[in-house]
Image 1: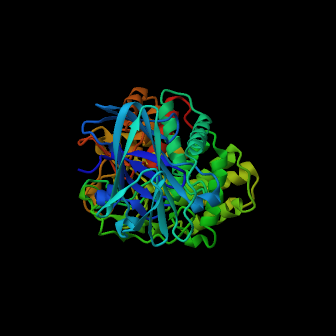
Image 2 (image 1 turned 180 degrees about the vertical axis):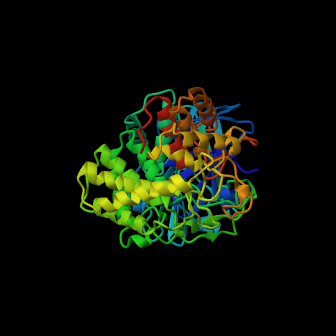
Image 3 (image 1 turned 90 degrees about the vertical axis):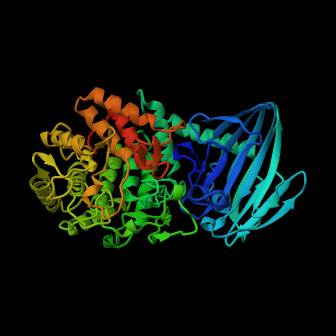
Length: 598
C-alpha cells in the first residue's frame, strides 16, 4: 500500500522540498530545484524508485512527530522497548545563492533520549525519475565514512554512516544511546565539481531554525485559526523560490485527483494565477518585500511580446514546459500516467491577466513603489487583454474540452480594466483611461446579460450550470457578497455542487472538461464558501465548515489539493498552495479582518 498523502511531512529550503513518511522514509526529493528530476521517487512507484529510510530496527516502534516551532524542522520521536530516540530532519536554508548552486543538503540528525535504540538505514538512489542508476563508490575512512554516487550531471555524497551494497541498494545501521547524536547528511552537487566540504550541522540547524521562526513571527493575524494561518503562510513561503521569486503551485507531480484515475498533473511550476493569489495572501499579512521579488520575476518571465504570454512558467521563468509521460513509474497507488511538464502551459485562460493585474494593484495599494518597468508591463498586459476581448478560453480549471466564455474569466477580464482605470484615477499613472473605461463597461454589460440565468451567475454563457469559481466574484469587487444574484448562485451551488458537505469545482458529468473520470472536492472551493458565508452573516455555517476543513489537514497542518470524504483521505498534489491560501482568506473573514474586495 502506498503511503497515505496525509502521512507525509514537508521539508523545505525554499528551493526544493523533501517529503518524509511517518515511517521515516524520504519518498520524494528533486534536486537541486523543486522542478528538477527526482533522486527519490518512491511516492510515485515503490521504494526501488528511490528512497531513504531511517527508522528503528525493532518492530513495534511507535513514532510521534511535530515541527520544531514555526519551522520545517521535523522532529520524530521514536519509542521502542529498548529506549527512546529522536530524528531531526531538515534542509538548511542556505541564503547564499552561489552556495546553493554548488550544493543542496538534507540532514537527518539522530538524538538519543533514553536507553539505546538501533536504527536501520536503507538508501536507494535513483536519478532522473528512476531512469538512471548511479555509479557508487565508498570513500572517507572508518571514522568518517562517505559514499559518493553520480549519474550524468548529478552527484550526491552521504556522510555519517557506513553503508554496504545489497544489489542496487545500500544498507547500514546506527546505534544511538542517551545523550549521543549522529548526523547523517545527504549533499547534492554537480558531478563535474569537487565534493563539497562536510556541513557544519550545528550551525545549519541553528540558522535554519532562526530563519523560519523569525519569518513566522512577522505574520500579522489574530484569530481562532492563527496556528493554521501561520502554517499555511509558511507553506506558501516554502513554495516560493528564494533565488528567483517564482511561486510553485505544489511540491509534487502526478499525485492523483482520483485514486487510480488519469487526472495526474505536474504542479511544480509557477501558474501566474496561483502565484498572484499566493502573493495576495502574503501581502495581506505584511510581506511587501516578497511582492517586489515576485514582480521582478514576473517582469523577467513575461518579457517580450504580450501575445506570447503563458499561463505558467518554470521557477526561473522558463517557457518550455512540454508535457511528457514517465512509463517507468507505476504512479501513486497505480494512478497512471505519471506526467512531468504541463500541457496547460499553452492554453489561453482569460482570467490570468486579471489575477496578475489585481495583485499588482494590491501591491500598489500596500505601498509597493513603481519600478522603471512595472507600469509599462501592466499596460502591455492590459493591452493584451483588450486584444483578446472576444476570445473564449479554457477557464480557471484548465479544461481540455472546447473553449468557452466562462463567467469567472469574463469577470477577471472586467477586473483587468477596472484596476487599470484605478491606477490612472487614484495613483496618477498614465494610460488610455477612456478606452479602458469603455472596455470595463462593455465587460460588465456582457456579464450581466449573458453570465446570469434564472437569477444566478452561470459557469459559462449559454448554460444554467454553476461552478465554484463564481464564489470569487465578490472577492474582486464585481458584486457585493449579498448581491441577490450572488445569494442565488450560492443556493444553486449548495443544490448541485455539494458532495458530502464539500464543494466540487463543477459537475464533471456534463463533459465540459473533456476528460474521463471524476474527481473529489477541491479544498479551496470549500474555503471560498466559508468566506462567502462569513461575509453574508451565515457565521454558524462558516464556522462549522471551517472547522471541518481544518480537520482534514494532517497532524503537521498540511493540506493537499482535494479531499475524499468517503475514504477520509487527502488526494491530489501536496502540499497545495491553492488550498492553503484559501484557508488564510477564510480565516481572515471569520476573525473579522477579511480583506476588502481585491
